[in-house]
Image: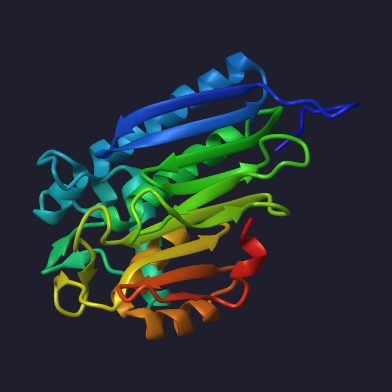
Length: 267
């Protein structure tokens, strides 16, 4: 990602956009680059989000994932994105020892990985545009950040406090990182929607929220989901074992736990 700032530091031009897709809002904040090239990349990125929704939505009977689940298609006859996402999901299941899964009660449902994957893909597509120095894509509260919005000013992402509506539990800073993502799983906004893969039922744990910080939103999104299903004690031990990964865990009793390196990401 090239930086367009030369000579005295100046503020790169900003392009912002919000798109309703996948049942949520994806917000784009793009800094630097030629406006025409940025707009073209933004249009392509937005089209990619809608394509992902068309391919992966379990609410659409004609989506490839729905048809795959019904046995009307096999992976070889699906769009290349389907095979890619299923391979990534299989890796997430392996790393999490089954706590992340795309199958619930025998039914294929890869939506737990799709939003993070789609947001990261959109950010990287725009970040590859010549002259772009910073990109932030926020997909329903999960954020992929690349570069920086201005010289000497990093991207920052607030983490909502699940027990105090309107408050922040932490602010994550991307200072010193060319890429950083923040993903949260919990019950505050959507209720008990995270499934325990062992039972096929909503996970019953001591947690109300897990926020994972790492370079790639694809994985941060998966790890937050898996960690929530594990419960705080097992999740913290597991998250500490993952490379380039930090996390903040909040229990129903208002206890805050975090990985050892998380303080370096606060700001």
